[in-house]
Length: 141
Image 1 (cartoon, rainbow, N blue to C red):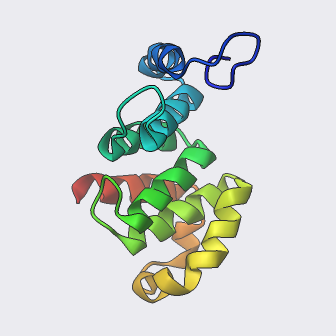
Image 2 (cartoon, helix red, strand yellow; image 1 turned 30 degrees about the horizontal axis):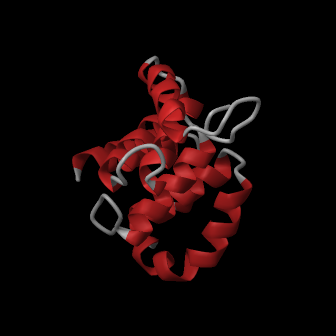
């Protein structure tokens, strides 16, 4: 409501307050939205590290849009060390979870990441098991 000004005056700071309350209770969409606010600097000071933190929480719950946004952070090196392999894994996970943007991004950047991903078994990457494998790898690096 507050982020888009639907039925109320647009107020990014108020949106952040409500997103944070819901995000702290584990709501993936609120975690994603809070990540976006930090990513864009809306209602808060722009902070890519915080954006990554919130995207990661939502992505761990299988939220495809968060997986896509997190993959972009890894691809661009925003708030994290640039890592094409992690970006590609997350794009694939987003694809498995049926996010249209992840499908587009995966195709767009496949050529960049594919050489670095050859050692990964593509069957594992595209399965639900890949979520656990990918997030374990992300946490250890």
